[in-house]
Image (cartoon, rainbow, N blue to C red):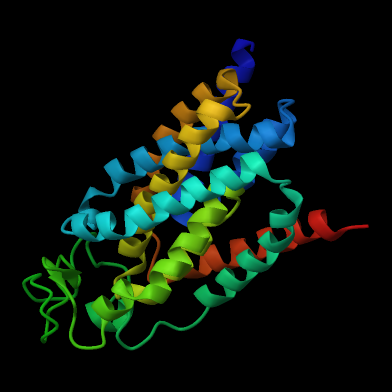
Length: 296
């Protein structure tokens, strides 16, 4: 691979890494780029998944304010997504991809429409009092951050579990620990490990329904648990898949830089714009994949 191609893939990685952490659509940029550089669809898919691990690393480093106090939550949800990523990788390596690609547009469209729902009264805006400009990253709308569900309890932890989780009966803790939530996360992680395009939008949509936090904090959790699904799938692909390492390395370097920059961009998006940008972009991707999948 010549120097120009290496630099080109690194640049693609930076842009895709920023897009991934902000609106969860890295693969919409990086996957076509890998195809343009001459990789086969399967090779581009697994190479992209391996490189995407570094977006998660960069995003985790850049999202430390939003992840403060959420280590327990990430571990509880992360093992579910890791198992799903492993299952998805196994499916990709052992079955024809066409069957799963056929449902991908519908999954992405459904998740995008879910993001367009107004936030619930106990959701991100109601919980923190404000999700608009001027709310510092990692801080809530008031209180001490104990997350006890009382007045002004939307502080730094935003309702995180033994360190501020469980904002009252029937609240976040019930939904977050419910079987339905874990099954949905597992299903999305299978998709992430198998195909992955716009998988972050699916993950963001599921997490938005069970975590009563600001969109930026939900996005930070999404970045980490999605990265765990990618990491497990990437390990399987590295051992058994047709990874093109000459393309994966510069792309991964770009992903790492872009993932680190992305959270700073997300913090500057006003109010619920992150949710709506992700939803609109997801619908565009769903239409694009649907046309490619079902065209005669």
